[in-house]
Amino acid sequence: MESIDTELAAQIRSDIILGAYGEKERLSEARLCDTHSVSRTPVRLALRMLEHEGLIRRSEGRGYFVNAPKVNDILQAVLVRGHLESLAARLMAQSPGRHNMLPNLEAAIDEIDRLIMAGKMDDASLRAMQGKNAAFHRTILEGCGNDYVGFTCSRISHLPMLEVGAMMFDRQVLSTTDGIERSLFRLKLGNSQHKVIFEAIQSGDAVRAEGVMREHSNTMVEYIKVFEKRDEELTIKDLIGYSEL
Image 1 (cartoon, one colour):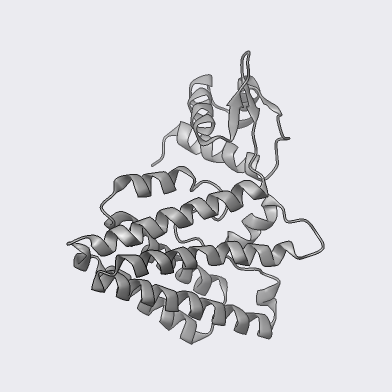
Image 2: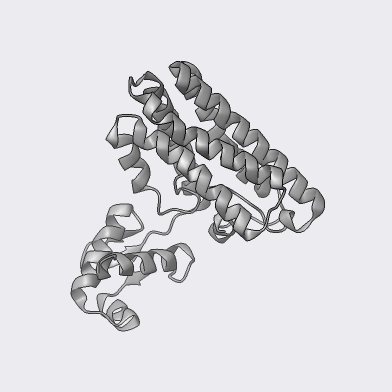
């Protein structure tokens, strides 16, 4: 069970990202205490967590101001995570103990293949795919032998689309038969990259594992750019909508 301050930080974080607070709005400890019916101690601890994440900043006097992330912040963070994951793939391919982790990677790949073959894109199927995708990526982060890679990824995981193994889906696209077929094709391509990464790690080809993982991670950025071509400007809420299941 999470502590009160951790749960409170999650609630305030969500409010900030969803725009409940205005940019540079001052966060009052007293107001947060009243809103969430808690004492000042968990509020102060929660605010320190959010300051560490960069979602708020301390004022020159007392209190904090909201520092909500912009779309460009998310895009930059996705690129950083891509580089970290590609580093993890290279390190894992170089690790003598990599073979112990291969069954987990293979199981995730096989289950994603099975779900794709079923041809369903309902909520349950999407959650299952996301879960197996997360298992694949988490296995590499945890099995690379460098704890700071996974630790650094965790520091930005609170942002939309930055959770390990996050996948992007547009509900509007999934509302049509053609959209479902195109989405399934995109998933097939993504899992094909998983297979190449798996084979590279298995054979100890660090250069190939790193290169394909970087390309694989960049597909999320390319997917976002597709949506930026719409008439409306992409917003944080859009990104949350694409990544939430």
